[in-house]
Length: 196
Image 1 (cartoon, helix red, strand yellow):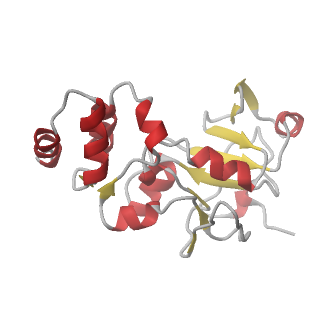
Image 2 (image 1 turned 30 degrees about the vertical axis):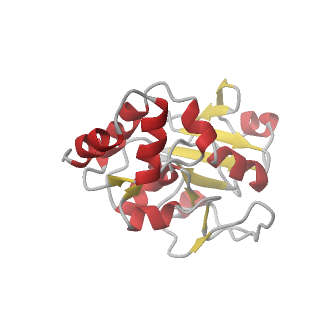
């Protein structure tokens, strides 16, 4: 039997209103990213797998909309069907540094391919390689398709650099933005590189 996450130092929730016993969950997005780089976590966001809508309600979570739930403290929980769905969910993230789901406090990382998944609840799971980009302090777009739908890609990058000022934008990401906007590649690179 798995230990109750509430007994862990990095437990999922302090709220007494929800039951998290044997809940399969990961920290995700900015929550996971800031945990890995050692920054203060401002917004706690989780993704839950292998639960149904009815089971989430029985556990005491509040249904907000679609697959989004909250606990008594306002922490956000995104529900996915299984680990394959989790990979698809992570691919909707704009940047690789946010396309990660992990059990807080892990020391080992596992990168599942789309055609292979080796379950290991004690490791981080991601369809791309955000940990490498975090180590290299690189902001890189996750997919070309996602970037095409951005309303303001420069603003999204500025938001990340506000929290991670030492990170630099990958050249391929700058080229993608330059091709789809009025921003010139070199002007864009100079502007974003000089932000501290």
